[in-house]
Length: 154
Ligand code: FES
Picture 1 (tube, protein in one colour):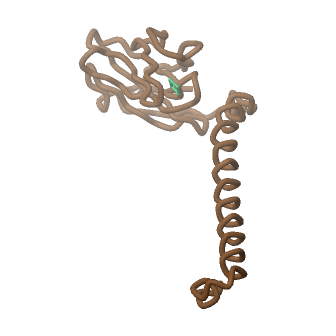
Picture 2 (tube, rainbow, N blue to C red; picture 1 turned 135 degrees about the horizontal axis):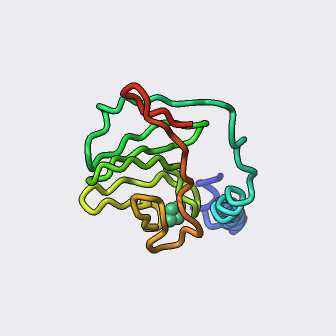
C-alpha cells in the first residue's frame, strides 16, 4: 500500500487503495457468508447424521447410596450423556440426557422434577415426556435393574 502516493493526490494511489479496500471487504463478506452457511447447515447435519450403534453390551453401575430422593446422577452411557434420577416418591428413572430436538444435554430441575433443555427451552417430565418446546419426542428410556445395592443400567 502506498501511503505516500495516496497523500500526494496523484489519483493512482487512491485507486489502488480503494481496490485493496474492496478486496478486503469482499473477503470479509465471503468469510461471514461461509460462517452463516455453516451455522445453518450444522443442525441439519446433526439431524440427518446416523445414530450411534444402539447396543454394545456396555453396562454402567451406580451405587444406590449415591442417589438420594429428588436428585439426579449424570453419567456416560454408550458414548452419550445419560441421567438417573430418584424422584421424591422414591421411583427410579434412567433416561438418555440428550434432547430429542437438536441434541443438547438436558438439565435436571430438582424443585419441580422436570428436565429443561438449555438450548431452546424444551421441557420434559421426570419420566422424559415432552411438556413443551420444540422436542419432537420423549427422552429415550434406558433399562436398568437394582441388585446388591447397585443400580445397573444397560
Ligand atoms: S436442543 Fe433441546 S430444545 Fe432444542
